[in-house]
Image (cartoon, rainbow, N blue to C red; front, side, top):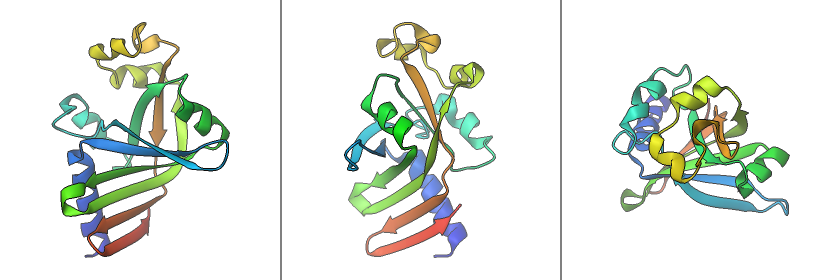
Length: 153
């Protein structure tokens, strides 16, 4: 598989994976992984398809989370993180890594908001506990069965 084919396969997996697995490093230096909403999934979140297609970097990832969460505390101390997308049945995975940015831009936060999220953020998009994370990845790894491709972005 050439790099462009690997990138296409990775993007496809990002659009189809049911969850995005976010890994941060805790205060003891250990990786902590948790399942998050995969906002890139076209079936689950069709509202965001156009936003992701308009990004300059096609691999940009947005994650919504609680400001009070341990992951935000981890990322404040160490902004390095990875996000993994997978098709477990086919032993296929795509991992993107880099340093995260905590987004303060309210207009962007409004673009990445769904009304039913008030169950997590009762005050809505301006809830102080609503945090938007942006990862513009620097590196990627694509796994399929026994093969692995690593490349820089």
